[in-house]
Length: 254
Length: 357
Image 1 (cartoon, chains in turn green, orange):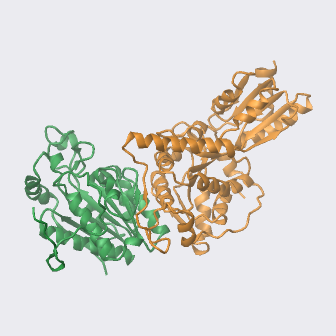
Image 2 (cartoon, each protein chain N blue to C red):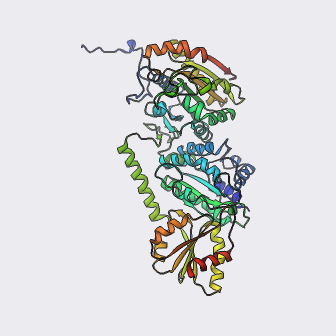
Image 3 (spheres, rainbow over the protein chains, first blue to last red):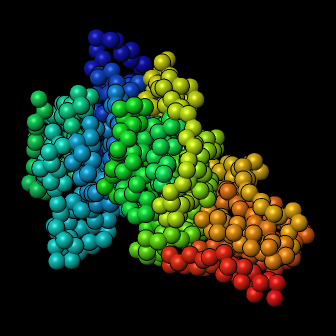
């Protein structure tokens, strides 16, 4: 094939500067890759590369530290916001955020999540909700929809047996320490742009010491959902979004 | 001053950057004293009451990841909740100080003093092959002194250090001599002295090329084994270099009591009583429980007739004494449990019954 030279005026897209060259372990079609890109772009655009302390969870995104080139703390399962609390209080001028999945944040880490938010810690929690446990092989999450089949709900989630899914974002919006709660997705280009704006707003809010921000991203897990990437995006729109509607849930940023 | 109160003063004086804790009897005075002292207005030290011991230890983990001198304190049931975090701290090779003001167990147990957490403190106390550095104060002065020592050891080895006190030492009032107020490290000093820490890439003023990653995760077994070997090498170095103990009347002793913390205070009276009766009794008090004074006890075993391990538990440290003695002479245990404390007379009786006969 003939080698094509890309001229600057023709360059419309490039890998963000803060994304490392490591090959991602995420499945093709997974939302994490897109979201990582947005996080890396926003950190760079805010000029915060040198002052960022990020906290990764337990779950698929435990390895976020392999992809975004800032300083990282890898937290025990569910404890990311306790770690972030201390990091921010001890380094008040830093940008401190957590990147957590639905199991990490709204199952095992509920207490740490709610209390960091209630204290109004000046950190951002990025919450990836794909309604399933991807890393451990597709078991039920707290956010698994009723009727949804997973490895631990093989006949579909039955509320009499498995309880109901819940929306931690709406719960957190009630807390006085929380100033910004939004729910976004990255399954269309338009949604990708909205998510980036939400991340920017949340990061700026934490740098302005405006209180706690939560950016939930309703995400696909096509491997866990056992669907193609395209079908997963459609399934997300038809099934996830009616229960987890997109948009700002709380915004008291002054 | 109370033992628990001096922990708080020692933390401020030794330049501690952050304390994160959750109230539990019999150690709540640590955080109460810090809140009264308001060190955030003087040294800039952060003090935060967390929602649980689980959160406390993970705040300590988060702070330690950023290279700061951070600590927590609790009592037995709370320390159990912290054990997950201690394993992560050891795995990620992070320095911090944890104070356990022990109470009787198991379960919710009693709020009275105990030494029932020796195994938990000295044998890792959580999943994985690891050790904490464990200091055992026997006075209010040592409660004060051990805070700075624990921080120094923790940073020297990048390993969590525990002060294993008990309800008696924590609640006891004694005179204490304070050390000087040391300044907290500046961010510039921190960046220079702890280049591994997750402080932000620009902390050194120049900007590191690569981000620092603090993790205990390694999925490649061949790499994880090397990490484990590095940890074990660190523990061997501690065993070689950091053993601390106090030997009382051991030089001519026929029998030696081994006891730590509040038990050792009581046993020193037993030594006097025995000597008055013509029994040549000595007391060996380990100050570091990990690393344990194995060599000292092994040397004593060459010339004494027997050891009595005296503990406020059903017999935990006695196993380490037996390992050190290695069958050379008899090793017996005497203990009380459930918050009950022995007197020096009953220890002497036990010595006569179990060893002298």
